[in-house]
Image: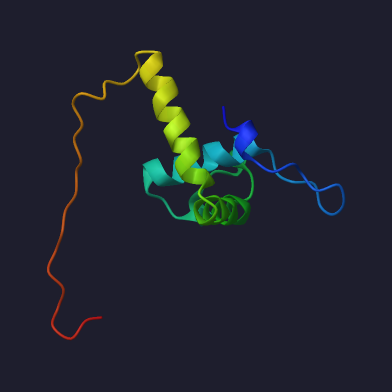
Length: 98
């Protein structure tokens, strides 16, 4: 699903972390709300996951990955796109805060 969107690993230098494992780590952090440093090591290095997410966002790859995941889940009947709810909260900032 996501492999066509990713660049090929470099021939030289350090071996690149497993894309699937890193993606699972990114999803873990985003869903759980934990800090990158609290990401379980089973997902690889937290710095790698953080950097990979930032690069994917910068180049528009993250948006494409999410789009493909949503389409795939919808085709399989795992999500219903007719009813969507967004949960958020907001608090007023203190005077003088930036």
